[in-house]
Image (tube, rainbow, N blue to C red; front, side):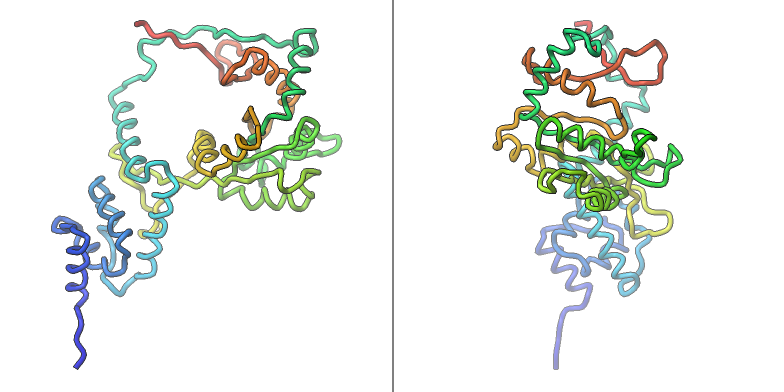
Length: 328
């Protein structure tokens, strides 16, 4: 006569082996632990410790929706691995920021803004041409990073923004304009995309033979999405149409720096002798008129970091660069 452990017995043994006390865990999760790997159970333990028990409150009995439960933890594992420090760090940081916002705390309290020091470049004058000459020579030591995750919905365009025409005479799209500009300077390029734009970007490049670049010169880095938050307690938001899926969203352009680091691309560039990384946005057709001179300023003045901006008028709805000085 064959014998074996019941589901309850196997779950108890698994928890014992993992040295986990699940007495306060949601019963709906405990009943389904036999579906999960030890690593997934540890991930569930972490989420419960971070106040995310609501994620499992509505789980069905074992035998119902089992594939969706497994898929849920596959998604959680991906979200956990794609964020520096994992979901625990993401939730902790979110709570701190939300609490500060609720309390009206301003991280810039005590700072006084002023116009920063820098070089004023006027297109075409002797000073501009001097720095431009230096920048053109220095460009062979630069990699270019196009942060291009956006769709053109806000502009009434059904597609990725880099496919928009930069001008109407030839219909040259922004991506082609950028690549041709980079080819005129040096041989290195990198781009950041996300799920909504990654495949269309690849298609645009491949269907146009990379606009003259070698495929090896273009490195596509896909930005993973992050979990949405449901409230000021930083509870992860479930998809309203699927209780076994976390709502996600793009995390913004700031991820490009950590993604370049985690991908190993920065090491590749460093080992190949590159000295500069130039970041630029997806729909600025005049940018490459100024990039060489800006790079020349960095090289001449030995800047570690340099930002390029146009003069901003008071109340104008564009970003600006400022120097912050603390009172102490």
